[in-house]
Image (cartoon, rainbow, N blue to C red; front, side, top):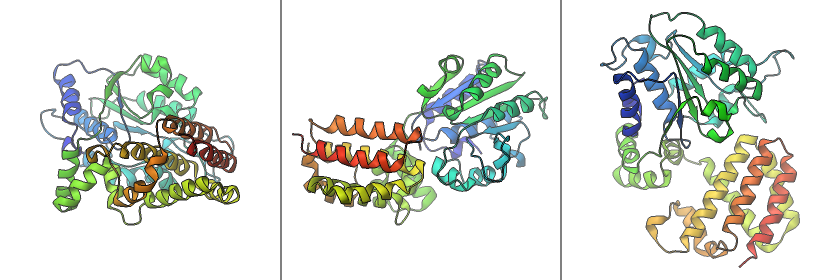
Length: 372
């Protein structure tokens, strides 16, 4: 894994390398940014860079190519399988095989892909206190190669409180030559004491040109299609990959969005209950993704009313629906739609009953659609 595998992000790359060259590398770094921006790709590339014998050369050892270096440690959210004992606290090593298979497919992946790899159903993945105990044990050992020990923590905001407090102590008193690289999407959910002890690097969305060129070079996409997909991706390489897939999840979400708005406009409460029951059958991560899609569609339909093509990022199918629907999203309800979706995401995250959450969501949509 090298920096060449990272799409765009030249500024972040240079900053990371410069810290090493100027001998001011902090013991804890937190890469923050939106999903699909390449934070994990940067973390893995930088971890390999630190572990390479010669920092002036790209990592070329077999151990680093296969992400099997003994001084490279991964921490990530896990679930509790039915086969695990009641006292067992799941740790990353329980899913090491699935994790290695996933990252070897590429450093750009989503939580949904990871959940499927673990065999999760309607569960939420977290990082347990058992993981922090395991990490303390691993990092207390001497480096096998006499250099750095690198700990990459994917989505530290998913740590439970006990784990977060133990990790805080580890960061405050780090083992010798240990570098923590956290990959975070929601830093506000982390303990303030942890945030204050790491050096934060904000990773911006990938620029459209880098996505366009990567689609052509890595995926063999024609120029015109690459141009369209790079705009729709809106700075996310994972989103660009989704657009390449036939029958993507977004098509299902669009159908659900259209059904919701049509049924709400017609005030068909009984059909809206059936709609909410359909959403309730999804896993919680998928429910959250639909609500994020919902917010994007609200935003795009609101912007569509300004009749400026440069501001709109929709597929042809989405735009076809917006031609007649966009006028119903206006200054009177656009922010309230956002608040509605964010409340639903919060409730789903707190394990609320999906049927109740989405039926209430549907009923509130009726109210908001009539506001002018």
